[in-house]
Length: 143
Image (cartoon, helix red, strand yellow):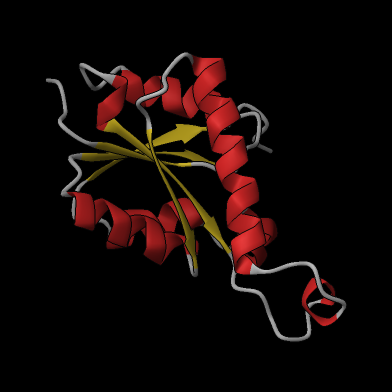
């Protein structure tokens, strides 16, 4: 069954393109796929902030450049894109809710044990918070 709106959180790792391609299998048109990247908020004591040059706006502009290159590489100029600042799990879930998404396609790090406890899991948080279905892809580089 085809979906009307699919959200794909990306981190621009090697798993970004496979996740977007997997999402495109669920829709009729790439315009129904919305890709989101969430930046962590800058601290006032971050070196880039203290010494100047790094702002949320400059980071967003950089991500938007990456989005444009990704759209060109995939041959999908109609992909929706969004850059947010905040907690990734929360922002991804909220974005999907705002779009009334049918599905979120997200890669998982595949961590377990101590690494998972320390690093947390964006995919796990999205599963708990999302109001739509979540399709979790196992990462190729999972440990």
